[in-house]
Length: 75
Image 1 (cartoon, helix red, strand yellow):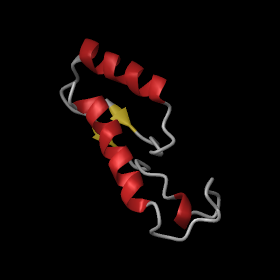
Image 2: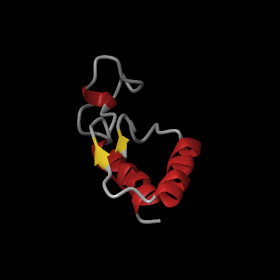
Image 3: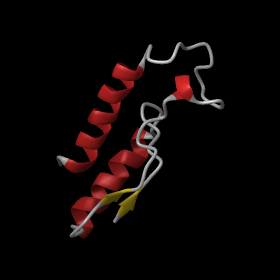
Image 4: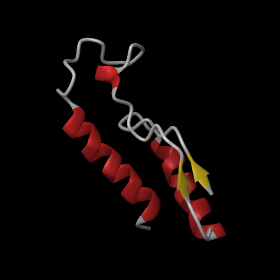
């Protein structure tokens, strides 16, 4: 199973729950994360938080991503 583009903290939580259900049903032998787990809007030229200073919310974003990954994989 392959996951990409979670873009935490703006992930779609309904899709995260659905993905968790699919993981539980299929029980894949491997799960691959291909990138874009975090959005890093402060560093992006097309992010939603254009007024942000780089580093300002990065710690918060990492914590949100950790919660999302836990919801997916700690079942």
